[in-house]
Amino acid sequence: QVQLVESGGGLVQPGGSLRLSCAASGRTVSTYDMAWFRQAPGEEREFVAAIRWSGSPYYGDSVKGRVTISTDNAKNTVNLQMNSLKPEDTAVYYCAAKRRFASAYSYWGQGTQVTVSS
Image (tube, rainbow, N blue to C red; front, side, top):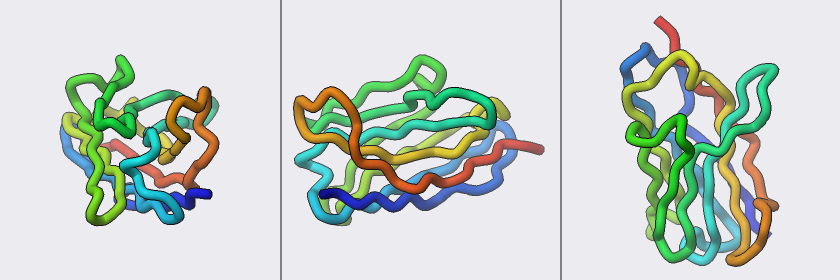
């Protein structure tokens, strides 16, 4: 069992930066595949970024080049550094985890709101 708690959301101006963090308990982030998703009002959930248990990151097309996902094994967190933020990045951001080789993410946090607006 994995419990996930996100933090770091807030209001930021277009072009600004924000760093989200997801604290995991129950299992270490280095043994699970970890990911960030987001969901804007009236929209479907969208994949943002993921990092495999092996450390390999991959990104959604809409954020590629502007975000970086990383893990901090000492703190057991997975972080999402977001730069050059746009109003269309406004959404609730969710942290997720799955076991290696599992087909779907089965553990989810409660989400943190990110609002990009002037």
